[in-house]
Image (tube, rainbow, N blue to C red; front, side):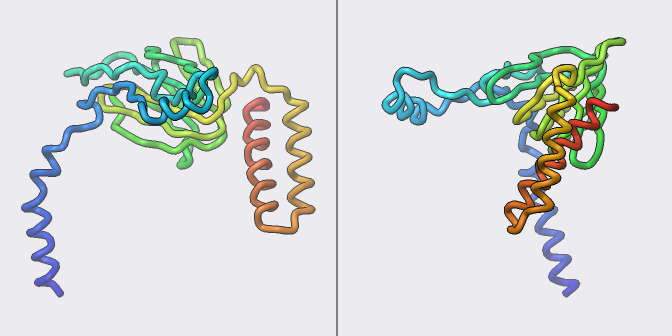
Length: 203
């Protein structure tokens, strides 16, 4: 058993150089890539409507990795239908990761974080802009660029507290009357999202 383990370790060591030769994501330019076959098929079926855009269509190429840590972090915050922030230089951004609130400063270690329903706050000097995001991903690169992609987002000051309370009550009632696992899961998701919305506006 130990002999097999030593052979596996030796094999891993010998194959390591090709792994180290792979480029980091920050060394690969972020270019907009269009699926030409999809666009052609779309235009054949629906010629009067433009093909849908993906978040990458709103993103500009990433800058090169600087030799020193910059004073600001560059944030790209995009949705499937719009770009909220594009190459915005800020002091810090705090994202609601599934592992907890994650603050991102210039020079942050490269990270991929899944987002949960919660507050995304963008800090620029004394100004703080807050968004409620439903879900998505945050990609923090070694060149102090953060690409944040959310399924849905809305500024916190545009949330209607009355509608949040109404939705929370409705989903709580649905959870109590649910009979199948699917109904329970859907109701629980609604409760989680509305509870996060309620926390966002109260506090």
